[in-house]
Image (cartoon, rainbow, N blue to C red; front, side, top):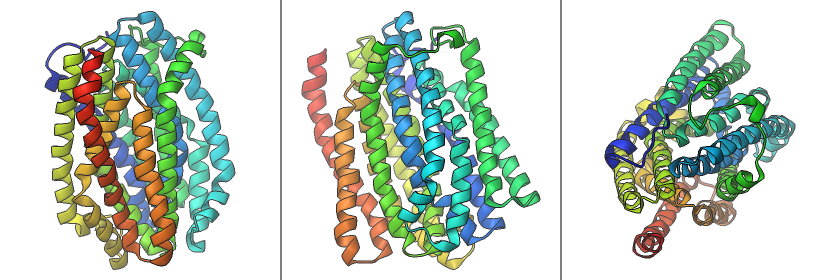
Length: 445
């Protein structure tokens, strides 16, 4: 039975939905970070740089298609909230079909352009070969990651965040075990870390697929019905394309920042790469509340429960800001010790700590911006956060890099550019949400 978020305590519904997502993504982040921890300690700084510095490139590809997964989740949640099982089923099978198409595109294009992108990013020669090996294997096996995210979005749109938690725990533990086996025991190098990742991703995909094939509800997947429904495709594209473009272009700006970081050498790449891994853990509550708020708002908009939408928005934003602020303080205070877990080289620790301490105290701005954008998507206004994020997080970052970055070759620029742009987007969202509550949302009631 679909776990509706349109009835009952708002606090319990949002927190109850967010906690399994948080724990699940904690384990997912664990198996992503396991690559860096094991590689950094067993294979050294260059291998750590090769594995940990490629996030911007992989997110550039994966993030675009995951934007469509977000759009599909909004559409499915709306149909569920409106109690329309026929349209729900059509949207579900359209989502599965899109996932299969995207899997092929990511695998083929990712492998094809990896060497060119690494050269364009200015990857140092001592890191280039290992980075290329890791990325080619990663993209070749990316079907597991793409399909998992598309399929799990279906479950979460129905209000089910518990089964994805179980599947991520299982796949994360398998990934860590395989990392130790392939890298430490079999001495397979960065290729071993890549194989461990894609095997665990395929496992998580198979687990969620099995659930969707057996569940007795409107989200059940029947392989014979997997096809694209034009009407739902248009709806998904309308909701998902702005998010996909937003993710893609922001990741492009992060790619430019990574190329700037690369100019400072492999130690900077390793240290800052470790810092971004830590940030991945720090932002997990933001991701959890972001997904919970989007699903909550979408279902309640479909059910026309507008007062619940208002109260849910306020609660989601408040919880996110309070939680991420506390995490930011911890990261600021313990940065040297945390970065030291990845590699004990003093220069690696210095670079990683520098970035962590600059960004840590401003995490509240990230939380606010992400959840505010989730509100807009849940309300069916995905273009609004796209414009805000592309302007503040992309255009401004690129402008700074090509002006101040050319005149001032200072690693601190790569640290401060993030809090600066987070503050810009937060300021815009404050103005927008005040107007939304007073005018736009009231008008919809």
